[in-house]
Image (tube, rainbow, N blue to C red; front, side, top):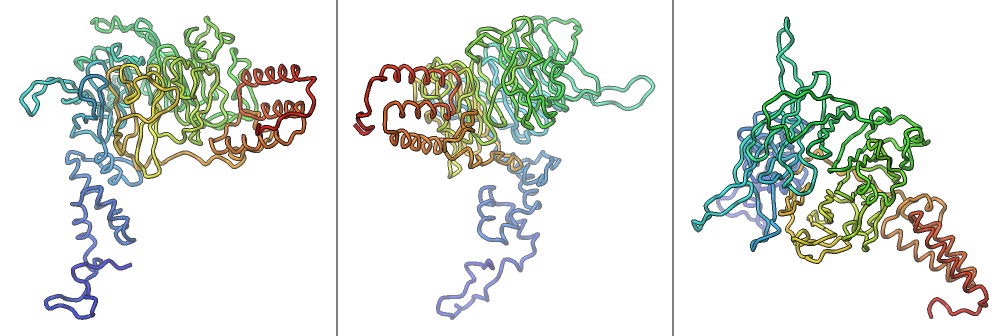
Length: 593
């Protein structure tokens, strides 16, 4: 295909008008000139132009075009960043960055956008606190977005969220605050950062050391700092526990977990502290595990493992003793381990206190899952997991329907939500859950379930036991979300190197045929489950007598992917019905009647 200038094309009759020359191809212009012209287009138009033909695809995909666009969008960005396509990645990160929020109370319930720091190189993650919002960009700069009184267009003074910003610190890797959903408790901000430290006596130069800096969220003032040895490199920090016994969990690059305990009530006092950094029990008892990421709340911690497992050492069921944490044929990655520190939360999550040891609360418990887990969301007494096939599993307390299973029965084991697949992100909040999903036309929508009090589920004030579409306008490039007691936040940012990692479900797990493997807990998608149920009904209908139908139903219950307690219930109920109908002859009504 040769792109031609529309105004210079020949007339249909073959005769050219006076003053017009021969058709001119865009390809005759120097590539540098074409790239220079295209770089003045908006990012959306550059992407659309690159989809018209092969020539414009190559031109619009050139790094020279994206370098000019990036410098136009972010004039203060000096470095091109990292990745295979650094300039294109940097330009799209800065074009799509944005923080949106919708307040639950008040008259005005629409989506608003916060101030956008000019120095920010995209948005990597964010955290709202009691009074303000903190945003970390891809260059390691942590921004402090303040709420303030501003003058409106009508001259009125109004309180506005995230309308002022300052740079809190640079060189940040991660940050965390009180893990509870209520932002009132988030008084301090813990920042994991890298700082240059002077060398030892007799040497020249300096060394880069990781440290944890503690800031007051209200003012941004640093009140505490602890520096680690240069040989230790961390990548994530989470908090767990009460204010007087706040445990800081630090994840190393090698996948090991270290912890230290501080007393938050004494951080604002000008004095020195001595804290001990110790290896967490999950890394001591299971040294073969390589933890990839962590999640926490006030009373529990969840670990998702990485790739460096040793074969033959991953458990299939959670057990209370370390000596029992051995099982053959483990998965390579994506295992989930739990620490639960209070009996009430343990009962909500697992439905029993059988394996809870109050004297050994750090003992990791392994969850039984059918596939590798990619990411998770952890609430106070319920959790959500997303596996490599895009399936969503929920577990824990379901008093308000926050598991989205359509009922209000607690789940002591991971239970699949069949009608939702391949989410972008998942959030477990205060007695409710949120899922950010994407349609076939790349449009985004926000789904929610659970308690709707206080406006937590916009459009559903009475709540819902199933995931329903919320009345929220979702940004096109939304990638993460957070719900507090007062507000719903959505972060917008698109990273071209973050490709979808979901796999297609194998055919053996999709087709709903009655095979023995189905009894091992392998879940099916909604279409496969419906097909399997039709096959089961056909088999029951083909049985000539009631006794045969009862036996076939018992057999089908064993095939279905149900929890052990549910199978026991159905088997016992069928036995009762079978004993009650023992004297009934074969002349029974058909299923149609």
